[in-house]
Image 1 (spheres, one colour):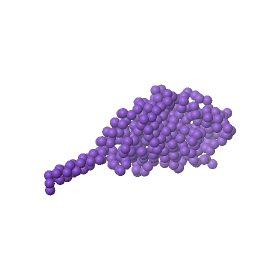
Image 2: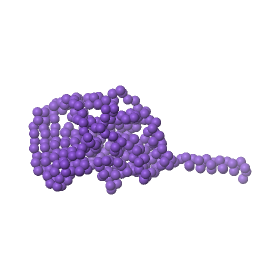
Image 3: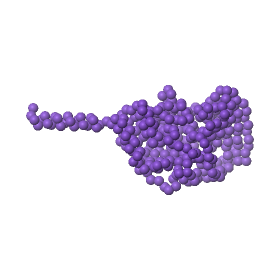
Image 4: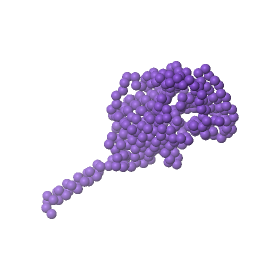
Length: 338
């Protein structure tokens, strides 16, 4: 065999080794690239579909996610069964807010959100969870990098794991599954778009501008001219039973107060208004933002409140733990008291 042939074989073999070495990134390489992208980007806009299996029926949401570096966020969640009513988690220079414009309900937090808990639809949160978990597993497919990590849900230990898939081409998230203790998927997020070079308007993160959709919805509610609504019963009652139910007619709606007694005492209030809401100042609260599956809730030490399907809910107890409050609230779906 001639010298030139040896050189050719050596060159080709070397090239194959080089391609092999560079062809697949290690876990450290991928994590480094994710962190690099977070550091260099000015923000992002993304859309996603989120399915949640926390109650009797699966709930599906469309999510619009906006992030403007460094600390501005706007996450709008719309239930696919009622496109008129949506909720917004907003963070700007004034604080963190949960808004339900259709009911003119707004809450203001002095909170470290989103850093204080896992958020399956936020790029930063996914990367931070990967970095924080020294035991995170990793594998690569033909088109994705896949991580399995622990989660960090401060108020809920029932969702300890997650699986995250990133696109190999641009390192953007494509899908997230949040798993229970038995590794069953409870939350399933599928990203449908991800723009790493977005533009924003001046008032995109302003509180007032994000509450203005209340007016149009309220006009629709007034046209219905009805204060009747189906009273919903919690399927999870922490060993208690309904002991009393009171109904109160309001000038512009109806309120139902239910008392549950047994192993642990709690009260559930449901209220529906039919008059157009007038814009009001946000209610300042101390607590956490929690995803209940059917809506976003506000969790305090002894109570949790939320809005869904045009109804305001307030669940209070000095005996239920925070996890029990969440469990009961998640189960208030689809069952009418006869």
